[in-house]
Length: 72
Image 1 (tube, rainbow, N blue to C red):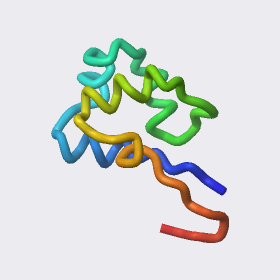
Image 2: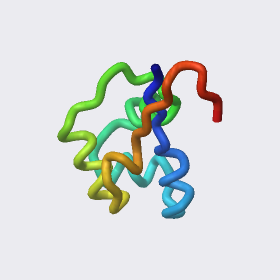
Image 3: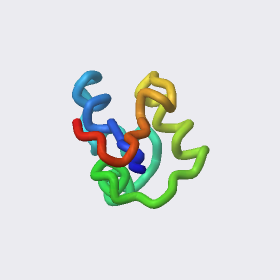
Image 4: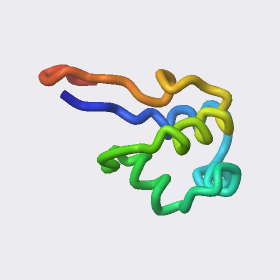
């Protein structure tokens, strides 16, 4: 089972850089980078809410579930 983070896609669609998002949500660039690459082991709801507000999206737009064996 894998949770896929689509932060890169959302940033591209909104023509926003990771640095700009970092400044808007007051989260370090390093922590956003960890999230973007899928290496994060957890995310606080407050962080998820801040990202969703900055990107005008829903949590389901940012995170998806990919069962084992599926490839995309």
